[in-house]
Amino acid sequence: MAAVSIVTPVYNAAAYLEKTVALVEAQTYPDWELLLVDDHSADGSRELMEKLAERDGRIRVLETEPGKKGAANARNAGTGQARGRYLAFLDADDVWRADKLERELAFLREKGAAFAFTAYEFGDENAAGTGKVVRVPQTLSYRQALSRTVIFTSTVLFDLTKIDRALLYMPEVPSEDTAAWWRILRAGHTAWGLNENLVIYRRPKKSLSSNKFAAVSRIWRLYRDREGLSVLASARYFCLWALRATLRRL
Image (cartoon, rainbow, N blue to C red; front, side):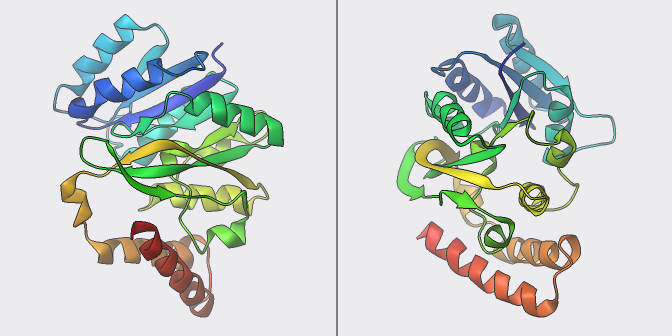
């Protein structure tokens, strides 16, 4: 049984998938399984996934259920099939440094933690680092997390012997990953931050001009609908979130 299960949702990611998988295969910690979850791709991604799985027996190909689409459903399908003690998420267009798993797993074990995340760097459309690194605090509680979205999905690692797997299933809402982190922390867990840049967050040019109003609306709705915060409390956390989000991208 693999020590670490890595869940990667795949939707029309044929342009990125081989590089992402190659960097998983290059990890200095080799005891892993990679669950590639096809989210009804139509660009040849499924055929590529099958080819990669034939080449490396540590790779398994799954798919989301008919009628269910989106990153949350894809990650949940992988989470449900994970065989490892530890669970990590990796988006199909992001990349890991070669020692990501080794460094973060050692950190998680050292702290005796259930939930860890790392620093990361913004990358360009080719996943080349831009020098903009998001640093992370040593620990993050629920209240602290409400004022910052510093936990990036491709950096997280969980110990499934210390955390209920049901907590890791993401809700079908916009910003599903943030909603999941808040739920985990609200349940009493602490997120431990490894302040080492081990992941590159690929941002294609088209994403740089994404709808900022939509992002603002998603966070606001999480405060009000998912967390049930008052308007006053939501506004306070939102202002802190907006300030930190702006500084992070400068």
